[in-house]
Each structure stands twice: as C-alpha cells, then as structure tokens.
Length: 491
Image (cartoon, rainbow, N blue to C red; front, side, top):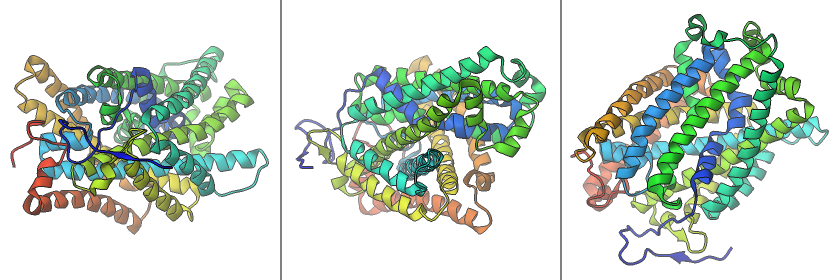
C-alpha cells in the first residue's frame, strides 16, 4: 500500500512526530471503549468465574461496589485529562504525578497490558471459532489458525484511520448488547428457574466466599474505560466528548454487568448456581442462553463471542499502537514509529510494529491448548492492568493535591480519586498474592511469569534513569511533556 508521511506543520510543538487526527463522536467513542471491554466475553466467560471464585450469589453487589470505585477513579481521570494537553494516557498521568522514572515504567506497563489483551483476544476468538466450526461439522483446525485470520483483518484495520475502526466496533457491539438485553429480558419474563429472588442482596451472601478475590475479579470487568483519554487527538471536541464518554461507559458497564450477573444467577436459582458452576463452568452461561432464548440465540451468542473477541483485538491493537506512538514521539523508542500516515492520519508504523509483535506471540502460543493460551494471556493482562490503574490512581491523586488552579472542585476530585487509590492498592496487593490463580500457572512457572512482568516494568524505570544522565533532552520529554505542559514532580 503506497503512502507518504507528514511532518508537523510549522508552529506546532512537536518532537518530530506528526499529529494524529480523527472525527470520533460521543457514541462512537463510547462504543469503541465498550468494545474493548468485550461485553459478550465478560458474560459468557468471565461472570461465571467471578461467581465461582468470588462471593458467589453476592456477586451482583460486588459488581456495583466496583462500579462506584471505577466512577470515583473516573473523576480524577477526567480532571487529569483536561489538564494535560497531549494524549499520553496513563503514561502521561504517572509522569505528571510521580515523576519521569515512574512515568516511563508505567508506559512500559501499558505496553505489556494491551499487548497481552491483544493476544488473549486472538486466543479466545480462535477457540470460539474452533468449537463453532466443529459443532457445525467443519474441519478441526487449531485455534491459532483462526486467530491468525482475525489478526490479518485487525492489522489491516489498525493501519487505517480510527474513524473506520470505530464504526466497525460500533456495529459489533450493538449486536452484543441486543443479545444481552434479549437474554436478560427473557429470563426476567420467565421468572428464572424458580422465580426471581433478591438473595444476592442479603448480607450473608454479599459477605460469603472470598470477598478479596471477588473484589479483584469484579474490578477486572471494568477494564477498558480508561482508554478514552488515549484517543484525545482523534475525537471531536475532546474537552467535552472524552469526559462524557468516560462517565457513560462506567455507568453502562455497572448497570449491564450487575443486572446480567443477577439474571444469570436466577436462571439456575441461587441454591443451584454454585453446583452448576462447579461441574459445568465453561458452558453454563451458553446453556442458560439456549434454555431461555432458544437455539438460534445460543448459536448467535457463540458467533458474537467470536466477533466480540475480534472487537477486543481491534480495540486493544489501537490502544497499544498509540502507546507505542507516544513513547516514540517522546524519543524513548525509535522516532520512526511516531510517523503519521498522510492519508489515514493513523500511527501506521506503530501499528505495524504491534502487528509484528503480536504474530510472534500467536505463533509462540500455538503449541498450547486454546483455553490455556487464553487463560494465561488474559491473566497477564489482568495483572498488568491492576498495576497500571493503581499507579495511575496514585499519580492523579498526587497531581491534583498539588494543583492550585482548580479551587474547590480540585479538592473534591482529589478526595474521590484518593478513595479509589486505596481500593486500587488493595486490588494490586490481592492480585500479587493471588498471581498463580490469575494466570493459571503452577510452581516455578508462576514466578517466572511474574518476574518477567516486573522486569519489563523495571526496564522502563532504569531506561528513564539512564536518559536522565546521558540524554537529558529525551528525559525532559518523557510523559509527552513540553515546557509548561505539565507540572512534574521535582526530581
């Protein structure tokens, strides 16, 4: 595909990179972020796990609690986004609040996070396609072949302008939401297995099972809402669109997942749900869809699990590309990765780099069974995301606490984000102590994977320290920072 590259226009502050452009509106941004969250993936594959390993019948309440925590964090996320002029996401936020060394470590954490999310989407989508094709009498191809097919389409779309990807994500997400609404309405209309009850809201069920694991896993349902800030340069009126979209996404996820968890529990009955999940975890949600909405909806749900995985792969590819673009724009990574396509206004070189890394990852996982490949990559994503959001929450709190321009509003934002920081820190402690459970590994492999993640984060921090001594010009730009853009922590 022939293309030319653009340089920044005169008068635009830049470090040799072009400027990303887009025309994403409120609804397309909301749907893009929701697609990254993967509602069908959460429903069919994740909610049953949270119920089984967490606080059982009380799961809907835990989902609501985590929604409140996410909304508290969102107030700081939005406030920070209005104060920082460049779309560096958590990389910029950590730098502004905690300094450049922590900031670059956070940037590397983001790359781990969204790269692992990308791989997990291909593993899950490939696995779902493998099962669906076999059920329909097709050939028994391995999951990774279907994953590579998804990869080719995703890579092509990731190369193009974000507006086109947003339309694709909006279409698939609409189908997912329609099916989930139909399922919830069908179960409610039929009264569930034995009538609809409120057992989920009784104290003895809320505090049953493992509260800590329930909180950790339920927070994982909200992954993706933070991506709104990374698309700042590619949306219409970002100062209004990004905040509204962020709050809207958190609100939708809270209501949708709490309701679906409650409906799913009642589809089997509060007394039977745990036994069902202990014996039939993988297919319990699909069986419930088939029972209450029919065989067509069941096959539609399976197909939508594939499209949901595709949407997740596209959304995470776009986010990973933009983090790579931002690190390159600051000179931390090769400058060539921050070139912008003249026609598509996309970070095409960063997108190609992500594609190369992803195809290597898929091929390296090809020897694993699809379920194992998905569990491990999704676990790595979950842990990296927990690290990312805990550091970001602390950084935002510190930054807002030092802010002298926001008045009483800034005080309120500092308090709400500070409260969320406490919960995010607890989640990080729980994630580290339950790392074996999260990634599905045993023995020495658990420590190897954990050490590898921490080593990459440490590499980012060490790199920043080296730049401070040997490349002060690059060090000064870490965090998408130009003079006067932010007020970084004194170092």
